Length: 630
Image (cartoon, rainbow, N blue to C red):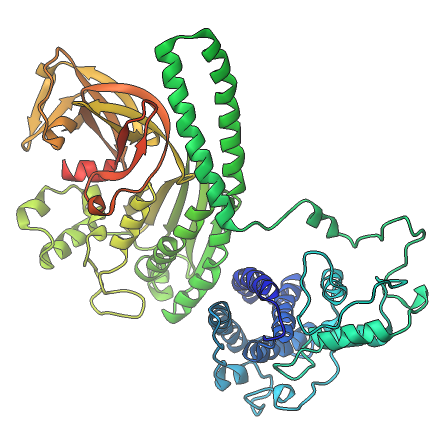
């Protein structure tokens, strides 16, 4: 890629990654409905576009693999052949290889070629060569079939490369453009054929024909408008007509995420300043200050909302990889699974979308491996042979709920209790005190696994504990619901954004602490004499249930203030609730989350730090860690 600018290579990497993300889902859809011509065309175009871009950059390994897939898909499009399971297996494996090649290109290293047996698996003829002859040294492929025709968007992109369109850097080896050209948007037949050859990889791997095409375009005399692939403008003053769908580029722009992060940080500082002014307004009670701070408060809230929306991405960006994951895991375990995805358009902060990928991948794999039974067992239990795995997302106020649900065998709490004792993770007395719901959460213990033997997918006792810790790092929580014979449901709740968090400020002693507002159910007062004790811990008897209590002052090791009434903040933790005893509730405030210093990270009960309106530092409490260590 010596003749290609870094900007062009970076654009190719971004576009290729988007294509690969879509191809996994499209291939699964095509395998389930081979007669779907639209899906077949979409898959073909994906490999075709990857091959064209890789050919331009001289990425031989990617061109060879995409060409093998393209040949087979092209034969299926023309009705000359039918795709069989081996072809789909090869296509799915090729996506893994293409991803590895793309990662190598992004890292500045030469990608490794796909194994010959993978390329041979695409062949419609068992005796075909392992490596396509068209890509052997010095060979020129045959003329592209009609299915290789490019669409308007690809043609416009090639014209932009040829003529040096604004925003697209041409290769460094290209000849300089002349000062003036009578018809800059027209090319002749020779140029058009050369562009087609360049797109489809006709040049020998590692060479770049486009600069030569640019030189030919400069020397060639202009043709009549009738020979052009698109009509010439009727009047010189009228801009040329854009192809259908091309106007969208005028309304969108690709921005470096680091710039967005910098803007979000500035918004955070503005929010802190706004909070400080609101505190001063309350203290000073000045009418002019009040009139100035009011509009500033509204404008800051609107600006904060607008900037946060620019960072939002649909969770479908993560969901798109799961059809391939579910298909690969099910085939390796000889199971039949149907994946249903709901709410892929639900939006989350970009950082959260990326951070949720690994936990969700593990939950999907776990649901197929541990949850859904084999087809024979399902039939014996009166279930359909094909298991169902449901992946759904839905916004719930300031949080987004994501659930992974299967219709498998469910989780046996008693088996989990016995396994925990057998592995020495719990003593007999502690295990006996656990209720059914608490037993389900044993799967989050490090080193816990119900698998009798280790496989490539599970059995090592590593995974679910990482899922829980990762979700908690994101300020979220995970709940489990399961019924024997009916299946299991994992529900994840994470905030919409990691940058700014609505909180409830509470005070214990002289220090102020922040609780995530989404976890606060209510604030109540109770007389000290109404407290009871159970298993050495304080509880509060209410009409419908008994509420466990955690005294924040005792947890912090400070002396409690004497008073006639206790202030209790009721917090949600999974399917249960508990009360946190504090000295005072200061009210709601939006805070900017800052990470804890290195020396404090990992301490149970703390999630971060922030500056509040009066300028003081406040620690953000981790509700789950607070309950576990209280």
